[in-house]
Image 1: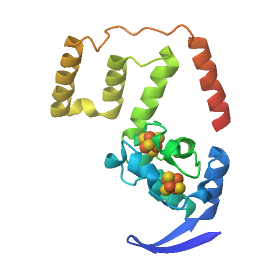
Image 2: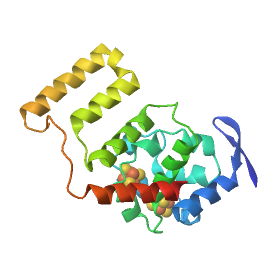
Image 3: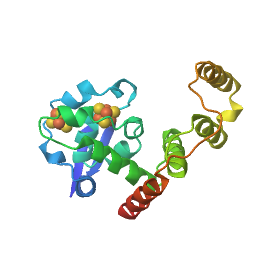
Length: 195
Ligand code: SF4
Ligand code: SF4
């Protein structure tokens, strides 16, 4: 079903099949949301998001796929579960965010912001060693994002890195965890599920 809307952005068309798809993949009962805003009030990252979590749910219900998948919100969500814990309707917002990220990646919607690049670089680090090695993460991200050309940004990062190193927060060489095989199996399973 097509939904026609008039918003501050003018006339928009919503696609209800998007809501259905997100619901099926995430098993989150989005239809139960009555916009009480308890999720967004507790979200520690909401201040940095372009849309608060409750707005993402409403836009998903209305089938505003482009707005949802191009938002910074889905990438900034830290999966901390505060929202799901606070929701009076037991809506699994964390799985919904995860589904939205996977959908955005599958559809190649990664051009609006560099956040998806950070996300995939972070996950590649976990897959490879079972944990994050900060120096490798920073190096990979800086090289692939083009941030290496931004001298001001680089010197800021280098200063922060030096402070972290002085406090013993940065390890020079990467190490692997013991149960790396299990981590790789989790990734294989997740990749199959997302196909
Ligand atoms: S807390 Fe639950 S019901 Fe309230 S706005 Fe958020 S998702 Fe909707
Ligand atoms: S899981 Fe994501 S959306 Fe929910 S409170 Fe945490 S950061 Fe916010």
